[in-house]
Amino acid sequence: MKILVVDDHPLILEGLHHVLKLLDGDVRVLDAQTDDARRLAQAHPDAVLMLLGLTPPDEHGFALLGDLRSRYPGIPVVVLSSSDGRAEIVRAMDFGAAGFIPKRASKELIVSALRLVLMGGVYVPRARFEETASESRAPTAGRTAAANRSSTTPRDLGLTDRQAQVLALVLEGKPNKVICRELRLAEGTVKIHVAAILRALNVGTRTQAVIEAARLGLTFDGTALHADPPARSHSG
Image 1 (cartoon, rainbow, N blue to C red):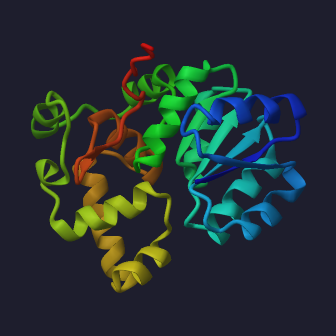
Image 2: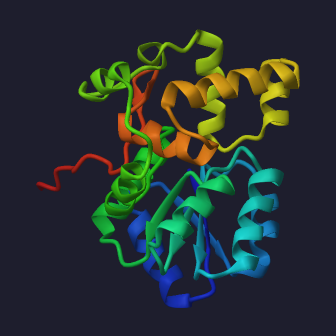
């Protein structure tokens, strides 16, 4: 499988080559500096993942993230950042990132987080995630019961099958127009479904929906979204 890495620091690029080999012995890592990110994605549309290095505040970097998600929606983008500020995390998720990993994270955490993303999950740092979640409105009784389980399904939240399909695409960072096209729905219908999803999750924005889905361990066909991936055994 191909993984694309974009960063302007040669040492980080070199280090990520070694870390990503821990994901899969057959992984092919292709790297580029920021100015060549679009060219790299265009040349390898079959890549399963892109890691994008950012140094907030970086208006150019966030604009690049948004552009990459718009042009190449089939390639999930995980932000590698020198900062783990809550504002940066939320902004990255707003631009469609599938995850946000601080550059100081251990190689074990990076590998586990990327495994989660490759399974269709979303990764955000636990400490900042919990800080953000604590500022959300109090959950309803139904959501509290669901959150106490090991995982939650859209049906547990009272969502229909169609709303679950819309939610899955929202969690991939796809805008309403793309959701309309993929599900063959009118834009007004998608907006109604999104509004119902936000109510079910008791949040006000799509970014908060992503974070709340991770907090609940929301499961789609057996794949859960978590704030932190489970620890993996590293025994011989």
